[in-house]
Amino acid sequence: MARTLATTDRFFELTSLLRFLASSPCPCSDGIFSCPQTESIFQFSISAYCRARKFDEAVFAFDSMRKLIDGRPSVVVYNILINGFVKSGRFDKALGFYSRMLSDRVKPDVYTFNILISGYCRNSQFVQALELFKEMREKGCSPNVISFNTLIKGFFRERKFEDGIALAYEMIELGCKFSSVTCEILMDGLSREGKIFEACEILLDFSRKQVLPKDYDYYGVVEMLCGKGNAGKAMEVVDELWMEGNVPSFITSTTLIDGLRKEGRVNDAMNVTERMLEVGMIPDSVTFNSLLQDLCNVRKTVEANKLRLLASSKGFEPDNKTYYTLVSGYTMEGNKVEGQRLVEEMLDKEFIPDIATYNRLMDRLLNTHKKRSKLVT
Image (cartoon, helix red, strand yellow):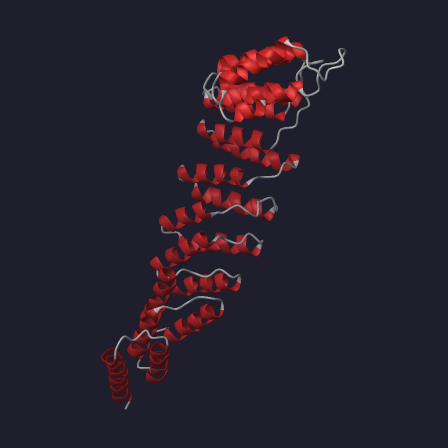
């Protein structure tokens, strides 16, 4: 019943029920020990009160529970209350409950420390956060990835970048695995401060040390480099990470292709596209057609068409823009045979709306071919 009342936010009835439980002995109790369900009932209720920011009721429920159960409350109940106070901006109350926890001789766990460290950082008390981190380790509680992430973010907020980076390397030494959030904090923080090349070196070092999470998307780094006109550096980073098994996401690959195209590195953009296709990533039609146009503009229509065939074999669906781009490229190069072959394909796929369009395409191919033949002779 308590769970139903809590989940449906019927707090008046829930409080009445808890008062009844506090004043009446449980039928399943043998008179010596308390009911084994008491703590779980009150714990669920306290969590609901905290979620609704009804802290007076939450503390009442906690105090009532303490009188009913055998022994001390579990650390989980304290964590629920401390976390509720921190999230509601009542950090002084959270610290007060932590002190109460210690006086009750309940041993804090990693979640307790993480909640309070985060609270200190939120309240611009980073020195105290570091002191609590030290206390945590002195008490024999091993920090986890959340502990480190919170402090690294705190160091960066304090503009102590070297300390934040050093803490990340300490994680490696302690065998604490990085999460994608760890990498995002480091890379985004350094990039925003104009330290993009330092971010790249750290990213590559993590990859060489094989601590880079496979689910980390380094899109932000690639976007920043390409946005600054450093698509070549972005390609170097992607190449090494890719070789180490950290395959770029679709959006990362597309961003790199666009960056390379803007810098006139058409061959590199084509190579990235081919690698995408090899691992089953199909580029969107806008990116793909733009690359084909660039290739045709530098008289590499044959290579552009080969790329179209490769993409088609991997599941890419060429549209009329794809074909018009290639036919235009062959027309410009005077390659009547290949151009005519594509026009026939367009006709089969119903990309040519009428006979007039068909004749216009064929006439352009024929006229350009004749002009080229005259120049040769």
